[in-house]
Amino acid sequence: MTLHKVLHSRVLLVLGTVLALVVPVLTVPRLPHVSPWPLLIAMVPWVLAKYLLCPLRWRLLTPPGPDGRQSNLWHLRAYAEAELLGLATPGHVGADVWRMRRLTKAGLGRGDAVLSVGLDRLVGAVGLTVFLAFAATDLDSPLVIVALAVGVVLVVGALLARQYRPSLLPSGPLPSMKALAVGFVISAVFQVSIAGLLLGAIAATGHSLSLWAIFGAFGASQLAGAVPGPNGASPREAALVVALAALGVPWLAATAAVTLKAALAWLPALALGGISLILLRRQTKALSSLSVPAL
Image 1 (cartoon, rainbow, N blue to C red):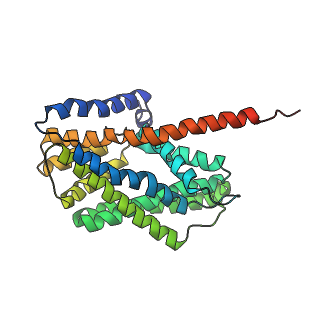
Image 2: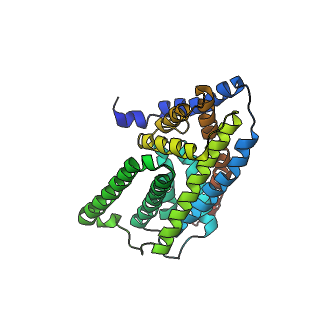
Image 3: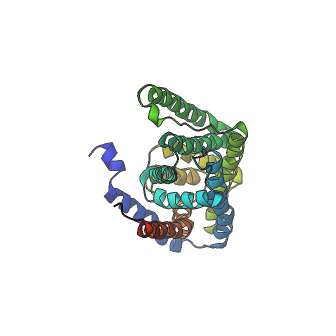
């Protein structure tokens, strides 16, 4: 079986998702002290950053379509739908595919849709790099190299597309420097909320770490994120467990905290993204029923 088939295997995806949900069920009851309140409290700023700030960042970086920009509510809904689909696909690729599909269905050109999602991803990656460079200076060099490599790939890809597939290039205006700056700030705030969520998950298991130690462990795990996998059972989560254990958190507690954090990510995705997908499907059916067949 090739690597491509392994990463896109539905059987492995289902097994990984089930594993991500089963592990906290098996590990949490074995811990002597478990309190859900630290994790639930930490989820509040994370949900706000994930499902409010990140969609607004995406809107800032999206070129206007023929009828102008889509509303904030449109981006909030599309982002929530994409996150639900992203959790069910390796490497979160389903989220990007869905966002581009929603943009093109709304009238945005294919090149502009690719620019919108790709630039949002890049701003998030650069924001993560800068954030970790200040939070954990011993981890910044590899992350900077990764960010620079991504930038080089994007530039080379744009040059090749301009030469061979000009239809893939964006036709709308590029985001302003102010929009990029706001995007970087939102990215940093989002990373802080993730670190806070992890801190809450560790506190829920009855253990504690300093916020700076969390930053370091989180940064180390990001390097393993280059290899995609299902949410909660990817190399990124495995690396995070190892990093937390190296910082003194017991293996059982580290495994429970990481998998519990990943499992709880499904709750807002199912609530917000699931409801939005149901409403979208109903709207599509209503529009289809109103369409008049050509004579």
